Image 1 (cartoon, each protein chain N blue to C red):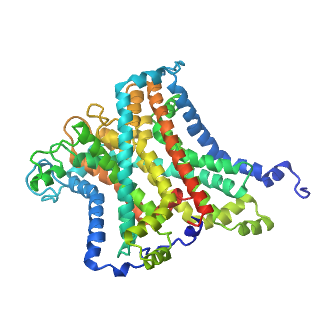
Image 2 (tube, chains in turn cyan, purple):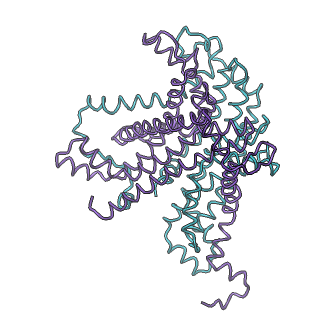
Length: 295
Length: 308
């Protein structure tokens, strides 16, 4: 692994690729890749189609379902003006931003302490951070629900802001530890000799060098909190406090008649913000994803 | 060591890396101890009590576990969880590795493809699950529509109404969501393999399959182990997909441990019972982690000792 990591750059690993003829390449590469892309993207296409299709076309087996003859904004209008969707959107943004910010600040301090201060026992703390990262929310939500209830936080945004860091901090700390590790010790030593305090070193030397890591951690933490479901489902019950995923699933699905149009519009608009954010920071996101898995 | 110039005890303490380390760790550690470690213990304890919503439980020993062991629904949920995890993980691994190998080829717009592929993984699962719910609709499913038009089937498929159909439909949705994660992380692993290995292998007359089997796979094993551990953990504890698609139905055929514990604890109010189901998941998770951990160590030891 060590030698392999040193040469990490996009290289074409099939050295003799030019020997493969084009028709063969189409069958073995482009065709399967096309099928993969089609299947992976189809649900999004379908969401978008459904969101702008009038009910008459939705509930008919005639005609071509893959296209819209008379696009409509009725579902979007219903979603925005007849449901509490805008409030859910606001809640999701607020909760995600605050819990991401808190987690990043806490994680920076913790990762710096573990990786750079190397206090007694820091290795064990580092390992337990990784273990904490492996604890799934599905086994924590019941005891957390009882705690949230006892702390009188049930049905508040604060309940989610306080609990989301339980999966954000371990992830961000682990990721940032990797970035901090790569910053040369000599820089810190110079600053120490010049009389800088540890906090000054962290803010003025380490953090500017770890900006890519901070962006990775921030993007990742934001999407993780945006996508969170089980805590938001359990700790909140009033519609005006819900987040988008929970609001759409619990409030728009009522009764026997499903309003597929507005349901899909809700799913679409709940997905677009993370997709847009992701598209701006793909490289950071991917390096966060792969960085967290490596080591 | 002396500290002659600094006078106060505080500034001396701030020089001490142990003290400073503690100070820096404090916010994160406090939050994790209160909202992660404590609930982890509390959850285990609740599993041994008869706690209900609004009532503090009394210690009942193994009663919950004994009841659950005899409970047909719990057994079914355990079976479903194992089935779901094993089938979905195997297919995710196979498809993910294939996709990673495809993306590792010299392609135009490679970065663009890689970005697009990860989309299913980054959007909220609950919301993409809704799209699958609509795709699986018994009356208006687009899959059924397409298959009928092609003349392959004559009646619309009841994707989520029949136990086995529902199991495979939920597994398919889970695979859809998980393949990008496996593919992109394995792709990162593939990109660290030096092309000179392949050149050497093909000069020695190795076929593409032999190159894959004897160069790619051994070098990729460590990252495969880690990626698949994560994948198995996520799949085993899955909740959202089932909750949105079937709520465990039809007739509990798709209940997983996580959804059943939610149903018993939150919807049913039996906190103790729900917590016992959640606690019962822990040994499986530990087993998965330990298998991969020791698998990795054996690997590292082999690589360290031999020239392989």
